[in-house]
Length: 229
Length: 131
Image (tube, rainbow over the protein chains, first blue to last red):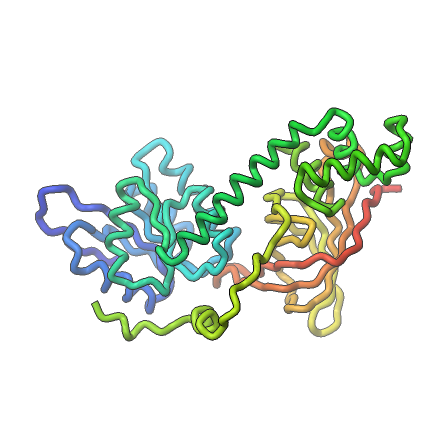
């Protein structure tokens, strides 16, 4: 566990916990932060996720810098776990450092609790500013990715609005959708709902338009999702 | 601060080479549904595998999950996805869909599992279970 003594400043230093199994990346992180008087690295975790989680509980850092090559589902679970840990105590803000190519996945990680993403290709001199921004409760995203991430957010919001149109399906359309989710064919749906096959087709066409899809499998997934959540 | 010592990632180099803006990769909305699935497929040595997994996300275009067998990019596999009873009116129904692994992700040194992204083929079927 490395420690760096905080210099005497008027405002209290930002306590930073670093998780980074890679020595090479870790040395870059520490170099980028060493001259900053506002940031105190209280601990560095390189071993297991379990010991990292213990350190969060024990040290309650202001900011967690998580640099890892874990798979995205694992990172997502880690973000959720950290959000749970810091819910009742000091709120630790999490900054992810990595090389995530998909903007969609960055947005999904922020959605589950991360407060920012710092790309390995970003200038290292910006890292202290990213930590400060996260500490203030704001979100940090790489500038060059911001516009495409905003596009993605806008598209997600748009999709969410479209998801809400599930409520705007007519009762019969909703029944048709539910039956599609059960794997029923058009003939079976017509029999169950006492309507003609042409009417079933017409309902499905309308559902496709309202949910902005053209895939029957996607309709089934909408139905399954709505049954679960 | 000097950053000249920082090497470019392969992703960045590829991005610089490519002049054509990338098309949006996905059209369909992905659902983060933790559905249980049985994954069947072939290892690179030709032996079959059949493992249980929990899906991370799914759309009509494909799915993402973690499994241990040595799947390689291009491996064909079949997913037998257990549908929740709340969605099927209490009946046990599986969604059967075939696909091809298009991306693999490591999950760190502590885990032998790989993240596998599968692109679905066109055919799928809903099968009642236990009949």
